[in-house]
Length: 104
Image (cartoon, rainbow, N blue to C red; front, top):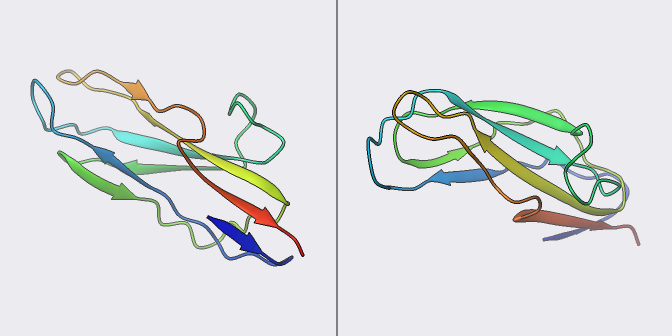
């Protein structure tokens, strides 16, 4: 996704917890983090972190309506699921979902 202009809307993300082997009732939250264009590896302090409650398999969305990404460049998302007694935790690769702001 590419967005143009100096004032950008707030951006949201979704992540899917697919059906897999073993129990499918994960209960802890997942952390969704958005990294600024200056952090291409998602190793720094996220520009935005939001915890989303997970309740079984499915797609879960962030509800951000206040953070506005405005720096030019590619913004990257990374999702971490903490796991529980029945399900292993996991972390997505940095930037599997991303968007680019190109100021004109």
